[in-house]
Structure formats: C-alpha cells, structure tokens
Length: 492
Image (cartoon, rainbow, N blue to C red):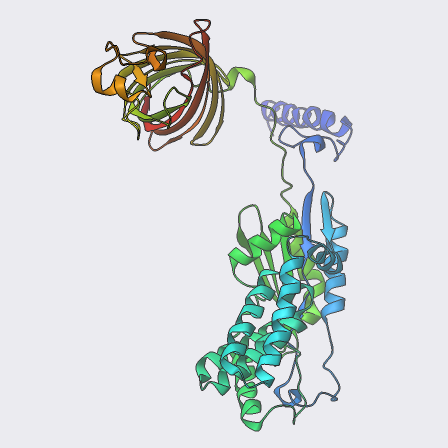
C-alpha cells in the first residue's frame, strides 16, 4: 500500500470516529418528552364509550321447546368483562358498563313513558286476544312493539319486547297472514335469541312456525347488527351521551364459538370497525382491535387566532314583501297594510352591524269602512344590530329608530261624515281622526333569520314592532305598528 493510500484510509477512520463519538456521548432522549408533532394533554378530550349487552346466539334448535334442558355456555359475561378491562386500561377513555347503560335508559324521563305504555299495550293486547278480538289485539300488539323499540326495551330487558313480538306473530297466524307472522316471530328471536317455550303452550301449528322462524333467523341474521341500523344506533348513542358504542355477539361455528365485534362511532355516525374472531383467540385480537380504534384521541378545538377570524365585511341588500297592522288604531276593527321593503346592512365587527330599511305600505279597507280612503305610508328604520351565525343560518336582532310618514289618513266612525263628508255640518268633527301627512317618531325592534341558498344569495324572514312617542300627544290614536316580511337578498 502506497504512502498516499495509507494516509487516506487513516483520515477516513479518524472521520468515522469523530462522527460516532458525539452520538455515543449524547444522553438517550426521554421517550415521554413531547415531540413537535404531538398534541399536549390539555388539548385532548376524554372519549366516552358504552359497552352494550353482549348477545349470545349460541343456541340450538333442538332446545327450542325444552325449557328445562341445560343451557348452552353463556359467554356474554366473560366477553363483557374482557371488553371492560381493555377499555378501562386505556387512557382518556371513560366506559359505561352494560349495567350502567341499562340504568341510564331506565332513568331517562323521556323513555319511561314509552316503556310503561308498551307494557300496558302488551297486557291489553293479550286480554283482547284471549277475548277472541284478534284484529284489535293485532293493532294493540303492533303498537306495543313499536313503543318497546322506541324505548330501547331490547337493550334494557329484551324479554318484554320478545313477548310482544311472539304474541303479535300468533295473532297474525290467526288472521291467516303467515308472511307477516313469520317476520314478527323472527324478530322475537333477534331480540331474545335464547328464548324457549313449553311444548304444549301453543298449538302445534304455532310451534311449527316458531321453528321455521328460528331456523330462518339462525341462518340469515347479521350478527354485526344486533341492535338495528345506523339511525337507531345514533339515537341510542345520543341518549347515552357517548362518543362510541361497542357491541358484540357470540354465535356457534363448526370450529367453535365465534365473536363478532363492532364499534359504532357516534361522531362520524358510522360503524367504524368490525372484527370476527374465534372466541378462544379473542383475548389478544380484541385488545389489538380496540387499541387501533382508540389510538387517535379526540382533540379539543383550539381557540382561533383573532387575526385569522373571517369577518363578513360585505354589504347585504334585501328586498321583501311585507304585511303590517296597528295594534292601536281609531277604527273599530283592525285594518291591514301590505307593501314591500328595501334593506341594507353591514357587519363592521363580528356580531355587530349597522342597518337601514325603507318600508312602503298601502292600507286596505277595514270591515266598517272607518278609514275613509286608502292611504300610503313610508317608514324609515335604522340602527345597530346583533348577529349570530351557524353555518348557512344567520340570526339577528335589530333595535333602532323609526320615522313613519303617514299619507292621507282620515278615519271616522260617524256615518254622517262618511255620507256627507268631513266638512258637512252634520258630521261630528270629534269623531274624525285626521292624521294626514303626520310624521311619527319612535323605537323599533326587529328580529329575523336568513339562510344562504348559494354563494351570495339568501332567504330572509323578519318580524318587527315599533312604539311611537313623538310628537307628544299625537300618537294616542295610531301606534304600535307590528308586522313581518319575507324576501330575498344578496351579499357582496
């Protein structure tokens, strides 16, 4: 090896040594240290998860009419405890146990009347069936089933709802509606799979239909939807106030009991994950399955930077058709006015706007013709408003000042004044309310809402009322105009 090559190799070895030495000398980083991409704990929010009662489909058709036969092994308690242990060991997760779910639904004041009424309808339907009023009993039992499902009776205690389903199926068989009866009996097993019957309790024809319904349910039921579709799961999650529902069923297979586990995400309103696994292998796989779902902890929305808040600084114009009446008027009955209005508003700060509005009305005749002739009026309103927006919806309240210019307003209740004119000697001048070209001033309050129907167009509905106090002594005959208008607008 030449001298030049020896120096080159030595330089490379020295460079490698110098590079490795600082890395070896550096202390090992704390694995719990917050990294730049991590979310601090104070911005994380607790996830509330409810475990629904586990449904066991591990039943045999041969035991359907053998109530005293030994029950199949009930895997539900062990599986519920396994789910509870895994979820409780996960940070930022609060768990509702199946018992807590039942208790929460039982104590729900809006569900209690449904549950009580369902039981009353079931007992009444049973009495009507025993009294041979099959048609009436069918309608009553259908109502009991609907009320039981609305009250989530299948989650609290499935037996009362299954009883109503079975008796409904029996009534439908008596009415010679076998297809509908088959559906009702099949639903009974979907609600309470482990249901059994005394062999001589029903007629033999009913037992045959029960067997058919049970076999159909066993072969075609979806074990991942034991509590219904997405809409019902969403309603249940809303009742419980949880972010997710965890539910499972156990059903027999040639290789042994199988667990079908599913998670309904209440925020996204979808079944987020599903798992099928043999019960003997469920411990590790269920743990990994739940861990994957719980890996993403929800984050609290951070307070927005005021400098980045979008402000609606555009000008809003609207044109509306309107209606108004006066709560105080010199006529014996109300007279009405119709017209249109033009408005403009500008939100110069978040939640605060200035506005102006011009209303033009034409009066209609009152029933007694106390208003001698139709008149026009103009109202000019302006002031500051307060707004609240949520998506396309915009609500507002607008206190302001109202200047009202009346037209040729003359009213009287004296027939002589109507027939001969207000200048005739027979006309009682004290009965004449002459407010021609009178200008009234007061306060106005308007409340309304608008909904955007496109990028810039919106529909607006508004109601308003005014109180006039000027000129002094000139508002005692005509006051308190109240009305509303509906129209379209455009925002720039």
